[in-house]
Length: 293
Image (cartoon, rainbow, N blue to C red; front, side, top):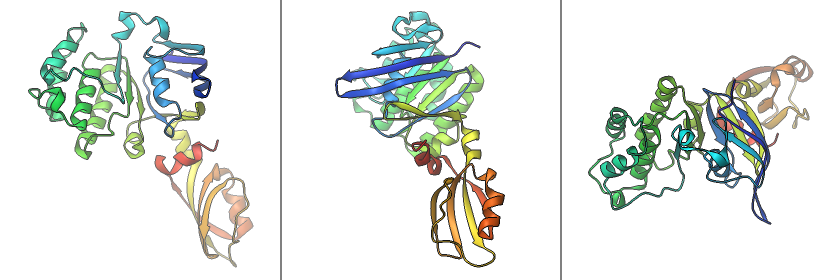
Protein backbone atom coordinates (compact mmCIF):
# COMPACT_ATOMS: atom_id res chain seq x y z
CA UNK A 1 0.00 0.00 0.00
CA UNK A 2 1.34 3.44 -0.96
CA UNK A 3 1.94 5.70 2.04
CA UNK A 4 0.02 8.98 2.17
CA UNK A 5 3.21 10.51 3.48
CA UNK A 6 6.60 9.27 4.59
CA UNK A 7 9.61 10.91 6.20
CA UNK A 8 13.01 9.25 6.09
CA UNK A 9 15.60 10.57 8.55
CA UNK A 10 14.34 14.14 8.21
CA UNK A 11 16.21 16.83 10.08
CA UNK A 12 15.29 20.50 9.91
CA UNK A 13 17.65 23.17 11.21
CA UNK A 14 16.45 26.76 11.09
CA UNK A 15 19.83 28.00 12.31
CA UNK A 16 22.85 26.69 14.18
CA UNK A 17 20.97 26.79 17.48
CA UNK A 18 17.51 25.60 16.39
CA UNK A 19 16.73 22.03 15.34
CA UNK A 20 12.98 21.72 14.80
CA UNK A 21 13.03 18.11 13.58
CA UNK A 22 15.76 15.66 14.50
CA UNK A 23 16.15 12.47 12.43
CA UNK A 24 12.41 11.88 12.03
CA UNK A 25 11.24 8.75 10.19
CA UNK A 26 7.51 8.11 9.74
CA UNK A 27 5.24 6.26 7.35
CA UNK A 28 1.45 6.74 7.38
CA UNK A 29 -0.96 4.59 5.41
CA UNK A 30 -4.29 5.92 4.06
CA UNK A 31 -7.44 6.24 6.12
CA UNK A 32 -6.14 7.21 9.54
CA UNK A 33 -7.10 10.18 11.70
CA UNK A 34 -3.82 11.02 13.39
CA UNK A 35 -3.35 13.03 16.56
CA UNK A 36 -0.05 14.90 16.26
CA UNK A 37 0.87 15.63 19.87
CA UNK A 38 3.70 17.35 21.68
CA UNK A 39 4.57 20.31 23.83
CA UNK A 40 5.05 23.79 22.39
CA UNK A 41 8.19 23.86 20.28
CA UNK A 42 8.28 20.10 19.77
CA UNK A 43 8.22 20.37 15.96
CA UNK A 44 4.54 19.73 15.16
CA UNK A 45 4.00 22.78 12.92
CA UNK A 46 7.33 22.20 11.17
CA UNK A 47 6.29 18.63 10.42
CA UNK A 48 2.97 19.77 8.95
CA UNK A 49 4.76 22.37 6.84
CA UNK A 50 7.06 19.65 5.47
CA UNK A 51 4.09 17.52 4.42
CA UNK A 52 2.57 20.46 2.52
CA UNK A 53 5.86 21.35 0.85
CA UNK A 54 6.04 24.71 2.61
CA UNK A 55 9.32 23.83 4.34
CA UNK A 56 12.10 21.57 3.02
CA UNK A 57 14.34 19.27 5.05
CA UNK A 58 17.89 20.19 5.90
CA UNK A 59 18.63 16.47 5.59
CA UNK A 60 16.56 13.40 4.71
CA UNK A 61 13.53 13.08 2.46
CA UNK A 62 9.81 13.82 2.81
CA UNK A 63 7.31 12.25 0.42
CA UNK A 64 3.66 13.34 0.20
CA UNK A 65 1.06 11.57 -1.96
CA UNK A 66 3.82 9.71 -3.76
CA UNK A 67 5.92 12.77 -4.66
CA UNK A 68 8.89 14.41 -3.04
CA UNK A 69 7.43 17.27 -1.00
CA UNK A 70 9.82 19.69 -2.72
CA UNK A 71 8.27 18.81 -6.09
CA UNK A 72 4.55 18.80 -5.34
CA UNK A 73 2.76 19.64 -8.58
CA UNK A 74 -0.72 21.21 -8.88
CA UNK A 75 -2.20 17.71 -9.19
CA UNK A 76 -0.87 16.80 -5.71
CA UNK A 77 -1.55 20.19 -4.12
CA UNK A 78 -5.18 19.92 -5.23
CA UNK A 79 -5.43 16.77 -3.09
CA UNK A 80 -4.16 18.47 0.09
CA UNK A 81 -6.07 20.70 2.50
CA UNK A 82 -4.34 22.73 5.21
CA UNK A 83 -5.59 24.75 8.18
CA UNK A 84 -2.67 26.81 9.42
CA UNK A 85 -2.13 27.86 13.00
CA UNK A 86 -1.25 31.35 11.75
CA UNK A 87 -3.87 32.53 9.24
CA UNK A 88 -3.25 34.94 6.39
CA UNK A 89 -6.32 35.97 4.40
CA UNK A 90 -7.38 38.86 2.17
CA UNK A 91 -8.99 41.04 4.81
CA UNK A 92 -10.70 43.45 2.41
CA UNK A 93 -12.85 40.63 0.99
CA UNK A 94 -16.08 39.33 2.44
CA UNK A 95 -16.23 35.69 3.51
CA UNK A 96 -18.25 34.88 0.37
CA UNK A 97 -15.75 36.65 -1.89
CA UNK A 98 -12.81 34.85 -0.29
CA UNK A 99 -14.49 31.48 -0.70
CA UNK A 100 -15.28 32.23 -4.35
CA UNK A 101 -11.68 33.35 -4.95
CA UNK A 102 -10.16 30.18 -3.48
CA UNK A 103 -12.77 27.95 -5.15
CA UNK A 104 -11.62 29.22 -8.55
CA UNK A 105 -8.34 27.30 -8.10
CA UNK A 106 -10.04 23.92 -7.63
CA UNK A 107 -11.90 21.83 -10.19
CA UNK A 108 -13.62 19.78 -7.48
CA UNK A 109 -14.90 22.59 -5.23
CA UNK A 110 -18.10 21.47 -3.46
CA UNK A 111 -20.51 24.40 -3.12
CA UNK A 112 -23.02 22.28 -1.21
CA UNK A 113 -20.39 21.37 1.39
CA UNK A 114 -19.40 25.03 1.58
CA UNK A 115 -22.98 26.09 2.35
CA UNK A 116 -23.45 23.24 4.81
CA UNK A 117 -20.38 24.31 6.78
CA UNK A 118 -21.31 27.99 6.67
CA UNK A 119 -24.62 26.99 8.26
CA UNK A 120 -23.23 24.48 10.75
CA UNK A 121 -20.44 26.76 11.92
CA UNK A 122 -22.69 29.83 11.85
CA UNK A 123 -20.33 31.93 9.73
CA UNK A 124 -21.93 34.94 8.01
CA UNK A 125 -20.76 35.06 4.34
CA UNK A 126 -21.48 38.81 4.17
CA UNK A 127 -18.98 39.68 6.88
CA UNK A 128 -15.65 41.18 5.85
CA UNK A 129 -12.67 39.05 6.81
CA UNK A 130 -11.12 42.01 8.64
CA UNK A 131 -14.08 42.13 11.05
CA UNK A 132 -14.08 38.42 11.97
CA UNK A 133 -13.30 37.23 15.46
CA UNK A 134 -10.39 34.75 15.88
CA UNK A 135 -12.93 31.93 16.12
CA UNK A 136 -14.67 32.98 12.91
CA UNK A 137 -11.34 33.29 11.11
CA UNK A 138 -10.63 29.72 12.18
CA UNK A 139 -14.02 28.63 10.79
CA UNK A 140 -13.17 30.25 7.46
CA UNK A 141 -9.86 28.39 7.38
CA UNK A 142 -11.60 25.07 7.97
CA UNK A 143 -14.11 25.66 5.15
CA UNK A 144 -11.34 26.71 2.77
CA UNK A 145 -9.40 23.53 3.57
CA UNK A 146 -12.11 20.91 3.03
CA UNK A 147 -14.44 21.97 0.21
CA UNK A 148 -12.23 20.50 -2.54
CA UNK A 149 -12.44 16.99 -0.99
CA UNK A 150 -8.75 16.63 -0.03
CA UNK A 151 -7.17 13.19 0.33
CA UNK A 152 -4.81 14.56 2.96
CA UNK A 153 -6.10 17.13 5.46
CA UNK A 154 -3.55 18.85 7.73
CA UNK A 155 -5.03 20.70 10.71
CA UNK A 156 -2.69 22.77 12.88
CA UNK A 157 -4.59 23.72 16.07
CA UNK A 158 -7.90 23.94 14.15
CA UNK A 159 -10.15 24.33 17.21
CA UNK A 160 -8.07 26.49 19.55
CA UNK A 161 -10.28 29.58 19.07
CA UNK A 162 -13.62 27.80 18.58
CA UNK A 163 -16.36 27.81 21.19
CA UNK A 164 -17.47 24.41 22.58
CA UNK A 165 -20.48 24.10 20.24
CA UNK A 166 -18.39 24.83 17.15
CA UNK A 167 -15.74 22.35 18.34
CA UNK A 168 -18.33 19.59 18.63
CA UNK A 169 -19.65 20.34 15.15
CA UNK A 170 -16.12 20.32 13.73
CA UNK A 171 -15.38 16.93 15.28
CA UNK A 172 -18.62 15.50 13.91
CA UNK A 173 -17.75 16.81 10.47
CA UNK A 174 -14.25 15.28 10.58
CA UNK A 175 -15.75 11.86 11.27
CA UNK A 176 -18.13 12.33 8.34
CA UNK A 177 -15.25 13.50 6.16
CA UNK A 178 -13.23 10.31 6.54
CA UNK A 179 -16.28 8.28 5.49
CA UNK A 180 -17.25 10.52 2.56
CA UNK A 181 -13.80 11.28 1.16
CA UNK A 182 -11.70 8.44 2.64
CA UNK A 183 -9.35 11.20 3.76
CA UNK A 184 -6.26 10.86 5.89
CA UNK A 185 -6.37 13.57 8.55
CA UNK A 186 -3.57 14.92 10.74
CA UNK A 187 -4.72 17.00 13.72
CA UNK A 188 -2.20 18.92 15.80
CA UNK A 189 -3.97 20.09 18.95
CA UNK A 190 -3.50 20.77 22.65
CA UNK A 191 -7.19 20.03 23.32
CA UNK A 192 -6.60 16.34 23.98
CA UNK A 193 -10.14 15.62 25.15
CA UNK A 194 -11.47 16.63 21.72
CA UNK A 195 -8.73 14.91 19.76
CA UNK A 196 -9.29 11.62 21.57
CA UNK A 197 -12.87 11.44 20.29
CA UNK A 198 -11.88 11.23 16.63
CA UNK A 199 -8.32 9.94 16.22
CA UNK A 200 -7.22 6.33 15.82
CA UNK A 201 -3.45 6.91 15.69
CA UNK A 202 -0.98 8.95 17.76
CA UNK A 203 2.29 10.51 16.68
CA UNK A 204 4.02 12.31 19.54
CA UNK A 205 7.02 14.58 19.13
CA UNK A 206 9.40 15.74 21.83
CA UNK A 207 12.30 18.10 21.09
CA UNK A 208 11.94 17.34 17.38
CA UNK A 209 12.09 13.54 17.78
CA UNK A 210 9.35 10.93 17.45
CA UNK A 211 8.72 9.39 20.88
CA UNK A 212 5.46 7.59 19.98
CA UNK A 213 4.06 6.29 16.69
CA UNK A 214 1.24 3.93 17.63
CA UNK A 215 -2.46 3.14 17.47
CA UNK A 216 -4.52 4.93 20.12
CA UNK A 217 -6.09 1.59 21.13
CA UNK A 218 -2.68 0.08 21.89
CA UNK A 219 -1.73 3.06 24.07
CA UNK A 220 -5.00 2.84 25.98
CA UNK A 221 -4.38 -0.86 26.55
CA UNK A 222 -0.81 -0.23 27.71
CA UNK A 223 -1.53 2.46 30.32
CA UNK A 224 -3.98 2.11 33.20
CA UNK A 225 -4.95 3.52 36.56
CA UNK A 226 -4.93 1.11 39.49
CA UNK A 227 -6.79 1.50 42.74
CA UNK A 228 -4.90 -0.71 45.16
CA UNK A 229 -6.48 -1.74 48.47
CA UNK A 230 -4.61 -3.64 51.21
CA UNK A 231 -6.19 -7.02 52.03
CA UNK A 232 -3.77 -8.25 54.69
CA UNK A 233 -1.64 -5.65 56.47
CA UNK A 234 -0.66 -2.33 54.99
CA UNK A 235 0.77 -1.06 51.73
CA UNK A 236 4.34 0.24 51.43
CA UNK A 237 4.99 3.98 51.48
CA UNK A 238 6.61 3.66 48.07
CA UNK A 239 6.21 1.09 45.30
CA UNK A 240 9.58 0.37 43.68
CA UNK A 241 8.29 -1.48 40.60
CA UNK A 242 9.53 0.12 37.38
CA UNK A 243 6.12 -0.16 35.71
CA UNK A 244 4.58 2.14 38.36
CA UNK A 245 4.71 5.64 36.87
CA UNK A 246 2.71 7.64 39.42
CA UNK A 247 1.63 6.84 42.95
CA UNK A 248 -0.12 8.30 45.93
CA UNK A 249 -1.72 6.64 48.93
CA UNK A 250 -2.17 6.39 52.68
CA UNK A 251 -1.01 2.89 53.63
CA UNK A 252 -4.43 1.30 53.26
CA UNK A 253 -5.17 2.41 49.70
CA UNK A 254 -3.10 3.72 46.80
CA UNK A 255 -3.82 5.19 43.38
CA UNK A 256 -1.24 4.24 40.77
CA UNK A 257 -0.62 4.90 37.09
CA UNK A 258 1.01 1.88 35.50
CA UNK A 259 2.44 0.89 32.14
CA UNK A 260 1.99 -2.68 30.88
CA UNK A 261 0.25 -3.42 34.16
CA UNK A 262 -1.70 -6.43 32.86
CA UNK A 263 1.52 -8.44 32.67
CA UNK A 264 2.34 -7.70 36.32
CA UNK A 265 -1.06 -7.51 38.02
CA UNK A 266 -1.17 -11.05 39.46
CA UNK A 267 2.38 -10.94 40.89
CA UNK A 268 1.90 -7.40 42.22
CA UNK A 269 -1.33 -8.36 43.98
CA UNK A 270 0.25 -11.41 45.62
CA UNK A 271 3.44 -9.58 46.63
CA UNK A 272 1.61 -6.72 48.34
CA UNK A 273 -1.42 -8.71 49.57
CA UNK A 274 -3.65 -6.26 47.79
CA UNK A 275 -6.77 -6.07 45.66
CA UNK A 276 -6.46 -4.18 42.37
CA UNK A 277 -9.16 -2.39 40.43
CA UNK A 278 -7.89 -1.33 37.00
CA UNK A 279 -9.39 1.58 35.05
CA UNK A 280 -8.55 2.94 31.59
CA UNK A 281 -6.90 6.34 31.28
CA UNK A 282 -7.85 9.09 28.88
CA UNK A 283 -5.38 10.63 26.45
CA UNK A 284 -4.78 13.66 28.67
CA UNK A 285 -3.73 11.35 31.52
CA UNK A 286 -1.53 9.23 29.24
CA UNK A 287 0.16 12.13 27.41
CA UNK A 288 2.81 13.10 30.04
CA UNK A 289 4.05 9.50 30.10
CA UNK A 290 4.42 9.36 26.31
CA UNK A 291 7.16 11.96 26.63
CA UNK A 292 9.06 9.67 28.99
CA UNK A 293 9.44 6.84 26.45
